[in-house]
Amino acid sequence: MLIGLYRHTIDGKGRLVIPQRFRADLGARFVITRGLDGCLTVYPLSEWGRLVEQIKAAPMSEGRTMQRYFFAHAEEAEQDAQGRVMLPAELRQMVGIEREVVVVGVESVMEVWDPAAWEDFSRKATESDVLEALRKSGM
Image 1: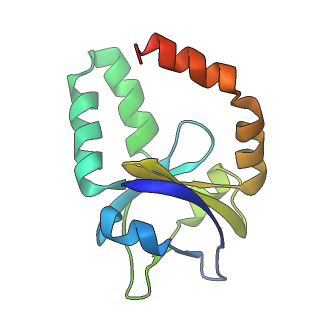
Image 2 (image 1 turned 60 degrees about the vertical axis):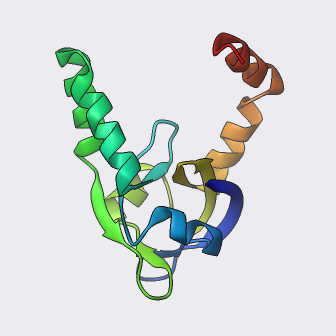
């Protein structure tokens, strides 16, 4: 399970050191794409496969929109022997990532955030928002 928050630095070659606790759960190969909240999302191949199946099952117009959003900028990647992954420059630019990043475990995926974007998201996500989401989901 991918949980926790880590602050890391992107090296001069655009590589991120994956937190040690995330490496086994992510697997050797995975997919990186833009996320829904202004971050990059890193999917283990099994989770990516589930997302693909859900998108394929969506009604055609919604499915096409989701396919374009997620697939157009998706990149297959793998971690090297030191647990690093190359974050493609285009994806980093899309979400404003430069050198410093916040890496967040979100159960089955890993998110990579620009620190300012993460702080902005964290400020806006209030306890009442979480309570409302829990209520709506029946929890």
